[in-house]
Each structure stands twice: as structure tokens, then as C-alpha cells.
Image 1 (cartoon, rainbow, N blue to C red):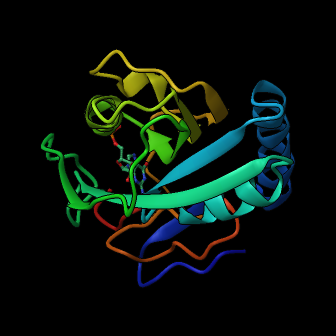
Image 2: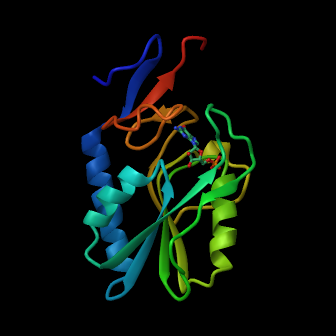
Length: 181
Ligand code: 5GP
């Protein structure tokens, strides 16, 4: 069982074995879709780093990776609604098959902002792989091309996802409840 800090509670939502199996399926789909081409993965820091690391190793393609960091949540559980780039890509994506790798698609504010700025840089194609999707929370009409799991409206941590920078190392995706809830 994952260990929670203080009076916080964790409940496993998606087990590591299910994540591993699904990541492999998503990778096979991407491999099929881009057969014979190069794919440039753009990981959205920091939450997507573990998903990206597992995903890229399952791709049977010519690949390259880069990272971008955006802020939207600050330290809490609520989105501020404002997105800005904290760390930009290292290199140009012009003419590349770009797959944005996200940890979770929630309101869609982050992704719609990212897609807008990345599209301006003229990639050949621009797709999105999100490990998790909370469709009930959507404010912006934006969709991922590859989705690991659809989940209910719960705050989750683990497998790269944090609460105030903690819990990213959990192997399962867990629902976090705070003492006040
Ligand atoms: P959106 O802009 O779609 O509302 O939010 C996307 C970002 O919010 C994600 O990349 C993630 O960093 C954060 N986020 C949304 N829902 C959750 C959640 O349940 N748990 C965690 N840890 N982060 C979340």
C-alpha cells in the first residue's frame, strides 16, 4: 500500500500493472499511426515525466524528446485558470510530428493553451497523448488523440502526478483525500 503523509489518505484508483499494460497499448497505437516516420514527444513537466519515460521505451519508431513546463495549478488542488510557460522547448518543432505528452486532461485550459502556442510553430502534425482524462471537468473543448484512462472527478496523485510536489513517485495512481475533507 502507498504511504500517505500525516493525516492525508490515499486510495488506489489504477494499479501499476494496469498502467503498464495500457501504456503499452497506447504506444502500439502511436507506432501504428506513425509507421516509418519520426515522432517528437513533447512532455509537459513535471507531471508527464514518468508517463513519457515509459511511453517512449515502448515506441518502435524513430523518436526524439523535449520538455515544456507550464504553470496552471500553483501549490494547491484548484486550477488558477491562468497558464504561462515556465520553461520553453529546447529546439524548433517546425515540420515535425509532435505528440504532446500530458499527465492529465482536466478543465482543458492547459492543453488548449499549449496546442495554440505549439501550432503557431508549424509542426507537420500535432497530437496529444494524455495518461488520464477527467471529461466531466472540461471547460475548453479540447480532446486528446490517445488516452490512457478516463477517470471520475477525483484529485489523483502518483505516477508523476503530485500534491504540492509530493507523491510523484507512487507506482499506482491514487485518490488523495485531505484531513479537512
Ligand atoms: P487543466 O488545465 O486541464 O485543468 O489541468 C491540467 C493540469 O492540472 C495537469 O497537467 C495537472 O498538472 C493538473 N491536474 C489536473 N487534475 C489533477 C489531479 O487530479 N491531480 C493532480 N495531481 N494534478 C491535476
